[in-house]
Structure formats: structure tokens, C-alpha cells
Length: 145
Image (cartoon, rainbow, N blue to C red):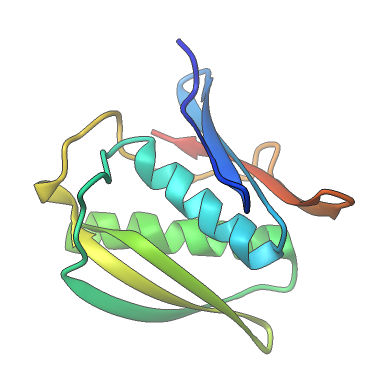
């Protein structure tokens, strides 16, 4: 089984099979774009987003002291919205705010989209990373499915 890979000139993401879990890797020139790619990578790991249309907007703030914790908080918000409202982000805009990020999410009804895999149940801290380097930012996160 091979992972999905979605790459553009500005960034990309891929899902990588992981024992009983799913690993998402993402990269982009900026921290915010890398986090957006991580959200997209998580969502396309279990739903076909081609043709998805937003039906509502949500604005949330995620706060954390460390960049890695911002990644976890953002993905936890996606899992929460999926579990409680049956929706997933098909558009994400992130803006830095003191102590965190403001996430403007364009949400689609998950039930209206083709299922391609197991939905994530939780974000783990196992081998979590979000770092910057000469090529930009990269992250990886493991999801319980």
C-alpha cells in the first residue's frame, strides 16, 4: 500500500501507512501554509474532496506555546468538527494571533463526500514534529483511525 501524495509549487502533503494508524506529512514555505497542508492531508486521507463545496464557515482560535502543539490543536479541532457536526474543512485560512492562530474554515458536509478511508479519531503525540529549515516548513503527525 502506498501513501497519497499531493504536491504543488507552494507545498504539499502525503499520507503514509503506519501500524494501525495513519501518518500525515506536510511541507510548505511558511508555518501557516504547512499547517494548512497538514489539515488537507488529514482530510483527503479519508474523504474524496474533489468537487466538495463549502456549506458554512467557522472561525476558531487555537492557542499553544509551541508550534507542534498548534498543529495538534488545529487537527483536534478538525476531528471535533467531524465528530460533533459531521463536517470537514475544504478551505482553510490561518492568521497568526497572539499566542496562537485564527483559523477561518470553509466547511463541507462530510456525509455528502465519498469515503476513501477510515476517519481519524484522535491526534497522537507520537513522533510529532513541526520545524523550519532551509527549504521551508515541514511537519508530521500520527492519527489514530
